[in-house]
Length: 105
Image (tube, rainbow, N blue to C red; front, side):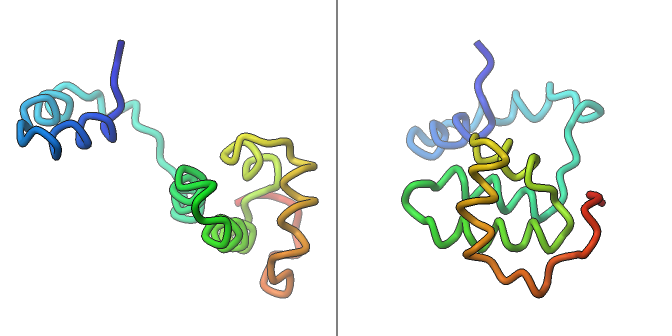
């Protein structure tokens, strides 16, 4: 079963053996890597830390919206419905800085 780079790094930090990480980097097909906007990457990181840091997720949602990320994409990253994401986070974020267009970048 393929392991994520994050899991490999965690194991390497614990054991001091970085061979698996080196092997992963040498064999990874970088041409198939996904390019992710910074705001979405930040949102993914905040979601991974959930439920420990709700304020970080709220800030990440605000940044993602300001960057033009649509609610359905935010919801997908958070693992909830678009309606739930919008209902929960829209009242918490600063809507003055959001783009007026509903089209993603």
